Image 1 (cartoon, rainbow, N blue to C red):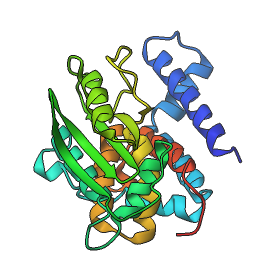
Image 2: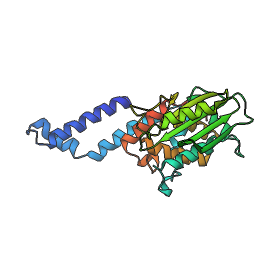
Image 3: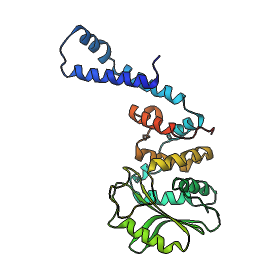
Image 4: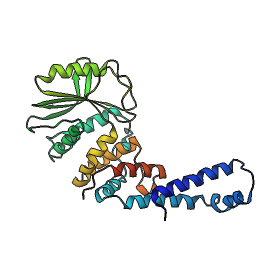
Length: 269
């Protein structure tokens, strides 16, 4: 039996052959047999391709499979509000989830997971605040993490470029407000990566996939339904999920989700 990756290559080659024949490739016994036996059974080919994804999914570790199950949740958090691509909603939610002062105390673990992506770590929990939309001179920082020993500014972008001199202003404000604390300027474009030209070089550049990979295992282990629904929104933004459940996703989205899940920790959930 072919491996899942081998099956994918095999059926891609079949699809290419079918396309070629469908565009008027000259008749021949072999070509006519292919038209009759393969091109007449597209759903069978599709099922076999999806079967390759099923085999690959079975080979994932427990936590990785549970993460894919979590991305099958429907509806996600933001789509019903028509705010899937509304940047302020993402900023407020990310800040809220990272707030270590939330009643359920889950924010500290998420905050540490985020700061770990930035190469930072809190030494002390008392005195830590996470605020969205912090007003500064000449702008508004999407997320601010303030601690006795650390100050972090996070600029989030979705379907937008950096505003004129935006990061440069944030760096100046970050330095002015540091008061001896370590600082970190984070640029978080949810899709598309960083702009090629920024007014100031951030200390850390992340994207939604980084955040999803850091938080999804935590959400699965905590069985945090609200967070899981937000992470499904993030997964929709970056193309590793669709609005329906797994079985109804396209072959391409399933493959993208499997590639993503393979990078997650393998620990038991």
